[in-house]
Image (cartoon, rainbow, N blue to C red; front, side, top):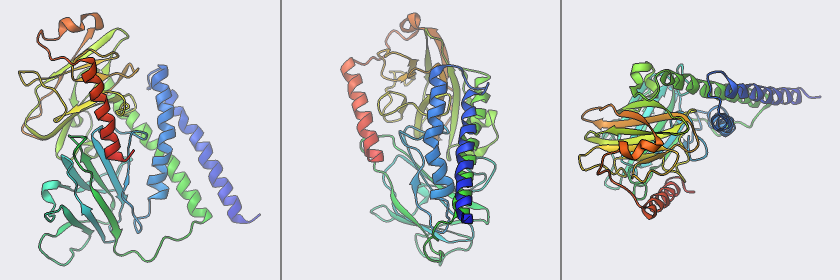
Amino acid sequence: MADYNNTLRQGWNAFCDELKRVGDIVFADNVPEDETTRSTGMRLLARNIALSLQFEAENADPEHPELLHYFDPLRKQGGDNTDALYLGAPVNGKHRYRLSGRLGSARFLAITVLEDGDTPWGGKVIASLFRQDIHCDADGHFELYLSLEPPPARAGLNWVQTTPQTYRITIRQFFADWLNEEPMAATIECLTADGPPAPPNSQDVSRKLQRSVEWLRWSVSYWVEQINKWRAQPNVFFAYNELDENAIDATPGGLPLIANWCLGDNEAAIVRVTPPRAAYWAVEFGNFWWESMDYRYRLCSTNCHHAVLEASGELLLVIAANDPGVPNWLDSSGYPEGYITFRWVGADSYPRPKLEVVPIKDLHRALPDNVKTLSPEERKQQLRERRVGVIRRFGY
C-alpha cells in the first residue's frame, strides 16, 4: 500500500480517537451533573468540530485568508454576544493585507489585530480600530492595510503595523436595533501571496486534522475553567480583570461584568442596575458552557435599543423558567445555572448590577409595585422580531 494511504488512514483514525477522548470533558467533576447541561456540552462539542476545522484546516492559510463568521445560532462558545456578528481571518506578519468593503451600520464595530498566544483565541492585542477610527468615504467604503512596513502615504489611509507574531484579525459587530442595522460587507486579500493554494496532501491533511481536534479540546476546556472561577461565588457580578488577567477575553472599548447565575427548581432572580451613558450596552445570558441561549426563539438578552427601563431609569430583569410578564425577561431555558454578562462599551461609568434570588411564589411581591409589564401579545411580537432580526443578520 502506498505510504500516503497509510498516512491518511492513521491521521483519520487519530482524529476520531481523539474526538472520543474529548467527550470526557462533558463528564468531568467540574461540570454540573444535570441532564440538560451535560447534553448541551455534548452538543457543543459536536457543533464546534466545524469551528475547529475552520480555524485549523479550512481557513488556516494566511496567504489565502477568508473573512468567515465564527459564531451563529447553531455554533457558539466563549460567551458569544447575542447582538453580534463575529468575523475573522488568519493573517501573518510576513505578508501584506488589504481589508476593504463597506462598514455597515452596526451600533458598535471593532477590528482587532492579534498576535498568537496562550489562549485558544490568541494573545496580545496589537491594535483595535473602532468605527470612529476608520476613514471611509461618504458611502461607507473603506480600505485597511496590515503590514510590517507602512504603505505609500495618502489621504484617508487606514493602516495597522503588524509584528512577526501576528496571526489573526477579528471583527466584532454588535447590533442594537436588530431589524434596521446593516452588517459589514467586506473582503480580505493577501497582497503578497504567490499563486493559489497547493492541492492537499496526506501529511498536510493529517496534520490539520490533529491540530483541529487539539483546538477543540483546548477551547472547550478553557471556557470550563473560566466559568468555574465565577461559580466559586455564584450570583455576584465580577469584572473579568477581577478574576482573570487575560485581556484577550475582554471586549475592546468596554468592560464586561459577569455573574454565574444559579437557581433552584422553585427560584427566580431579579437583576437591577441603572445603565450608564454609553455608546452601546447589552445584557447577554447563557448556559454553563458560555453558550448563549437559543436567541432565535427565546428571550435571553437585551440591549440599549430593546430594553424597557423603569420610570426611574433603572433596568430591571427577571431570570425565570416561565414568563413573569415583565418586559426584560431572561428565559432560563431549562438550565439551573449559567452566565449573565453586562457589557458597558464607551461608557461614562461601569455600574455593577445586583442579583437577588427569590422564591418564585414571592417574585411579584419582590418586584416594585409599579413595575412595567408586557401583555401576552406584546411578548409574541418581541419573539417574532427577534427571529426576523436573526435572519436579517445571518441570512437565515
